[in-house]
Image (cartoon, rainbow, N blue to C red; front, side, top):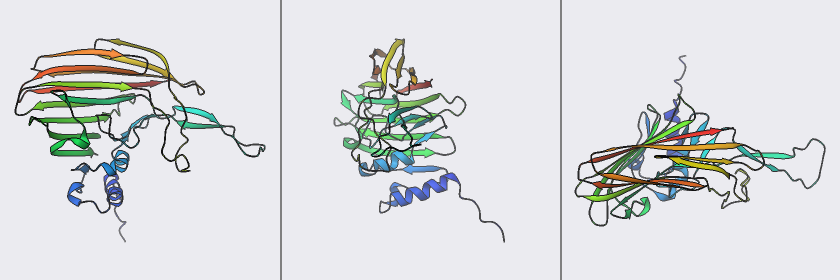
Length: 294
């Protein structure tokens, strides 16, 4: 008898999506040969979608959280083998018991890009969306999102983002972020941010399925500097003595006038672009991210 065809990775993700999103409208999560597709925002399903839209290259992994920095259930950027240690305490001592535990750390979050139109922030739960499409593309290896947002003043904004983690250079990730004001002039601010001040908090500390959460901060400041539109943050763990350097750099292309400001401290960095946007004139921002660990 002929062997049954093997289910490809995308089909398995579709099957997992169907189980996790059972009861939701099928047109919001349509089946697709190469994509895991989300056509509407359901905030109650953000934990499942962060997991199903996550991607990585074996060294660097990023959960599928929005670029705006939220809302999210458990934001996460991880490096394979980058961990913090903690003492294992037993009620009774015995020979051969392990003394030290290891937990993968949530490292510096470099993917945040916030959008403001005439001082009105784009925040997904409150936004009036004219179009929404987010998909994990298995053919290109990217997480793509297309949104048309109408601000409270009636200005329509199209922005398209594409996020990837490199397979050629495992240390590198990038985000392409294109904004276009469709029907009016506006002042646009695009704030590209990075932060390392992630705390080990969790709502269910008694859940044995979850990894151990560290009570305090895990990454401690070492050094920081900036040059032009590049920011570098260096941190280290306290017990495992790992050192992490994270860098972001930016390229912007637009026919609209723009300026930018750079600010950083030991735990965060920001490059804020202010653009005098004209209708139909696109603003293309490319954000490069690099992670190197000892």
